[in-house]
Amino acid sequence: MAVQEVRAFNRFYTNLIGALDYSKHLYTPYTLTESRVLYELAHATRTDAADLRAELSLDAGYLSRLLTKFERDGLVGRAPSEQDARRQRITLTRQGREAAALLDERSRDAVGSLLDRVEPARRPQLTDAMRTVRDILQDTPASIPGRGEPLLRDPVPGELGWIVQRHGAVYAAEYGWNTEFEGLVARIVADFAQHHDPQVERAWIAELDGRPVGSVMCVRDDATNATAEANVDTGTDTGRGTSRGTGTGADASGIRDETPGTARLRLLLVEPGARGHGLGQRLIGTVVDFARQAGYREVTLWTNDVLTTARALYERAGFTLVSERPHHSYGAELIGQDWTLPLREPAVPQEGTAP
Image 1 (cartoon, rainbow, N blue to C red):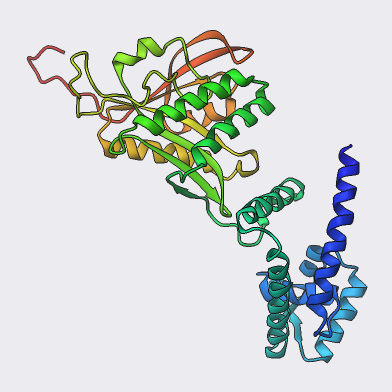
Image 2 (image 1 turned 135 degrees about the vertical axis):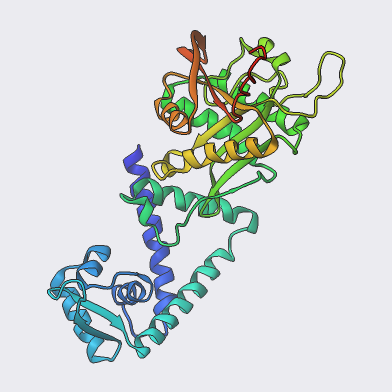
């Protein structure tokens, strides 16, 4: 079934691109392949002939003939590479840059005409789907042109729901956890949305190429809630339960304690396609920095032994494993773990005083 779907998509997209290419080249003298070479020369950081051949999957002889034609037409210049005299460095001339700019303009116009047929509200859905295809099928995601550093920011409306959906989908796919887990994450997120104190509690979304690829929360953890929450741990770097784990900050009398004590790191998630580039460590560091600036004494978290990558990140950030116990949750037998990171140096007793 998957093979048939891919083949059907290929036929559809080939026909679509063929129509775009016709309009793009209607008033230019360059073939599709020639246009691709001009585009790469105008935008790529490496312009050796060997790099062009590899990037565009072109036959060496064909590329050589094409470059000879470009050189004859005054579009490119060729010279030995500064790094390796055996390689040819290809550069666009002024006329070549003008030709590439014209092609780029025509291409933008053609794609713009296509997008005019798509409702504005559905365009993000279209581009997200295209990124997904590219990320899954590309061998080296980090080499995608224009891909920069992820942006960490506050969630916008709709993204708290994204946190719930992605936690449910990712942990079901990677660990086989059932919908009990997704329901618990939904309650955690709803509690945060309704009750969090923005002075000492915060959520972050990691954005890459205009879409969310990760999340984390820093919430206030009340000692008065810890016992009540002990049996509803989420088991996923999300922390404990929903019993105001964001923290009311109030004692039994209802009087709020304005000095935060323990922060809890929750809902840490990095999309599979965005892993391996330090984003998880950056999200953890952001929580720790925020907690320190907010005046917390320590940061704690709850996770499970099966989350080996996350545990390694916590340990690298300075967290220490303080306790663990087995439990059955989300359709699996797990070993829950508590980790803690002190943010303040313990007070040193003065001479002659009790410890």
